[in-house]
Length: 273
Image (tube, rainbow, N blue to C red; front, top):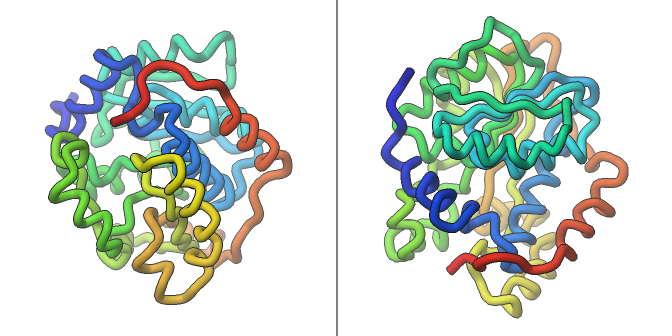
């Protein structure tokens, strides 16, 4: 099994020290930013009755969220860190639709096309060999949904250089064009693109509320969205004939109600700094 990538270790430390990832904490900005990413993932493709693998699932927060909000047949999370997988399993609470296993992003212990869909949520910029990670994901699933920081966002580039959190966690980002090129090099095709999010993950509540109000305008304005949005979310397929370019999908029924409930949950634990 492959050794852990160097940028993954700080996140393992967050789990052991804080009991969870700092970016997934209860701070309003984090909840707003993560809820928008979840909405984009659910809108990226049809998850109904699909067997889904969540590659680089971490503590399972979004694996469980996907299973709860999408009509999947199965959601299977994998991560190389054994301690993190134990945390993910502890959250399952008897949900037989969700399972977890320790596995390398580069060497998944499953046959070809074992799954219908693979989700890589903020994974590629934390691995040393992103193209190999994409290749292995395409081996086990014909369609990928990928969430990555938007490498064209100037504010994000500033944070990568000067923010203590970003520096300590090895945060980096790739341009959408670079990500698309990697997909094309693997004889696959990006069939859907979304530029989403305008709320910085670690920001004061007043700023988060203001950014959330402006977010829809940023997301729908050509030119502005490519530079202003925080995430690039794309759907890619190696089965081009079966999955042509698709139009934007609305979130599944009931998503906004469920997301609102998540945003209203009580504060707990240590908020991200």
